[in-house]
Length: 338
Image 1 (cartoon, rainbow, N blue to C red):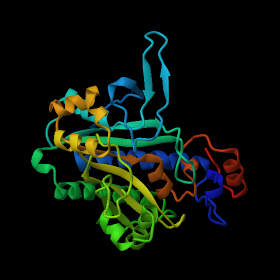
Image 2: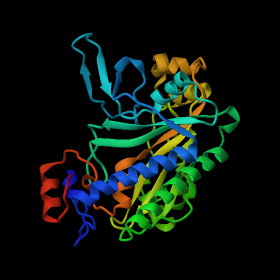
Image 3: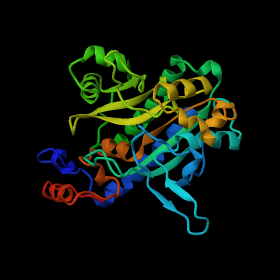
């Protein structure tokens, strides 16, 4: 099935903001949330790469099957890859910047994900705030994870409240608190549903959820979702997901977690049959404890704007490339893609 076949634009949809108002509102959302996130987690802004050396092991492998966009350099002959996220680069950067414990960094991350199936919330172009902070061994627990998630969700709600104050026609529909649930608890509660359907059902019930412990196999023998073995600790990670009334679906806003230490890295590479990754420079440095213990994640910029500006398609808040059939469908339904 092609992406444009599943794009759902509500009947009678009309954007409440025109093009110029939309662009101004996008900047307001991004400026406001960037400030709230930095304050909530004690982060400083840094510059980040658009591409890294292919052999460095720094590129994020995501679920392990996505193909990075790469190119060769005329001057040196080296092969470079456009980043898919900065999960590993940030940990290296924390060491380079000598960031103290319980402080961190964030950056504007722009990526290309060539294998993404595009629809109303998925694009080939990804923009997010990537963040990472230094923690201690005693912080590597669920309580610290929950505390951090609550802080990030609080920044999201504060931003949405500020949007509502500036644009009363865009009311905040998010609950004040986020609900925590493990992937196994979701499977137990909705055994007949797929992982995505479980998220939809639970998010619709609670408004905002954090699904924990993603990556390892559940009781069914299948994982809730695929995760690369060399950045998040699968027992201490998760996704912030909210229910979006306009599209009647769950929308993931953030994937995050406490990062692997040497033991978790070796264990997860063995479980996933990817021990060859342990020979890469970044992974070898982790095994040698050359980088600090950290936690981190990413928060989708366009997805936040999509929700807070009450848009029906992510192409209304970011400029990307879409299938011609999708462009035609959106035009017929009054959706103006940037």
